[in-house]
Length: 151
Image 1 (tube, helix red, strand yellow):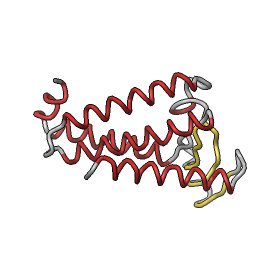
Image 2 (cartoon, rainbow, N blue to C red; image 1 turned 30 degrees about the vertical axis):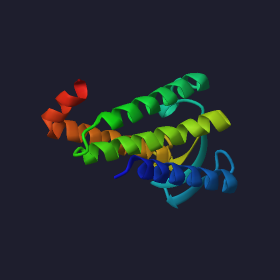
Image 3 (cartoon, rainbow, N blue to C red; image 1 turned 180 degrees about the vertical axis):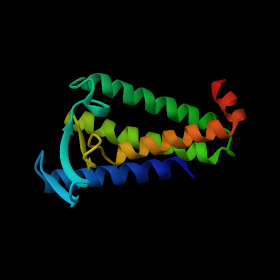
């Protein structure tokens, strides 16, 4: 998969869903999809995961930019046969950029997936978690890759 297609697809889906939530819901509003299990809840997240380090927007912007640069450089150093690793990094980059855009543009991240037993999250967060999970899976499955990544 080409980096740009996955990144743009992830970024587009993330930004479209956040726009739809912001245009159609009030902050704090919650719409039950499956009552007591899954709701759409509009949250302005001024922190990181679980709201930690709240109101540290400049810090998160710098971390987001640094992560994006690292992923792009690392991606281009990977051998072409590492297709799943490339896909995983593309998902992480798309997610990181989605939340970075929110922080730069709004000063917070729009979250809306609410399973009631976990903090509210968004498409960008899903992309980062899925991408990192795939990356870890590939490193565990392929010890040679782990050694190469450490170089």
